Image: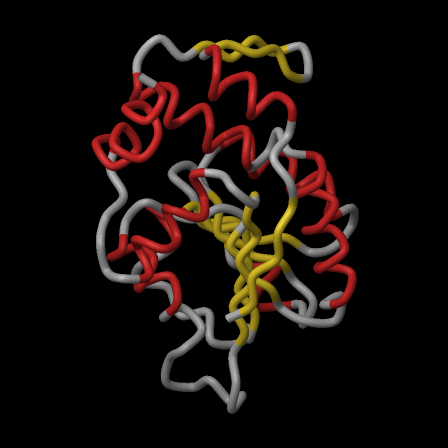
Length: 197
């Protein structure tokens, strides 16, 4: 396991403080703690240009490897796909399950949405998983790790890369799911909302 950090964006800080922000011509509003929790997670992912740049750099170092990327939101996958250029891509999400590129190309990237891709898929041809953002579910986190740690894996070591925004809710989420505990909206309220009162 290796963790790479980027800094919080101005937009993240504004959302945390005010519950509303405009980013990339999109207005994100959070009227309730559950919505704010989701918006902050989104601002750590697809709306964080530094995280996207870090992902791009990491993928460049793994250009000849099969890589699995776990993500949470639709906007994440759309922006990640733009980084990949002509690199072969497979997808597992609620709308698509296509592993053709993964099966046919040694340098394929598999984009897995946690709910659809963390269970029941044999991806042991790959030795690298990148967590673009952490899941709030310890079960999905554990299951996702097992996609490359399976019978038929020929590598003695598999690699897990966690891309996190320093000082954000992502650190608390990963800490909690790594302990086998779900990170809930109530946890978010206890960690952040109540501390602001």
